[in-house]
Image 1 (spheres, one colour):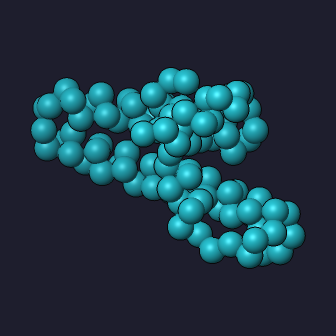
Image 2: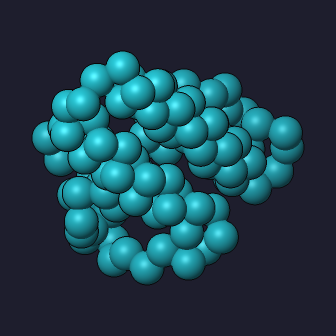
Length: 101
């Protein structure tokens, strides 16, 4: 799993566990399935805001590390869009790695 894939899943799961849950897998407004989709949307909004903040910082500074971070989070954002569209192909072992720290 690449670093940007891992970051994408970590961000989504941070939002997922903060959202309310009714205990049902697929039924109801607060089901696990709907909560995961909402977490993906939250992750996209958060990453977009982070990239915009970094872009403003790069205007004021010539630090190349800021541009590296922008590029990294652009890749993370692309990965989250793949997850949203169901195009992200990861094995269960890779997903388990996300939670190992």
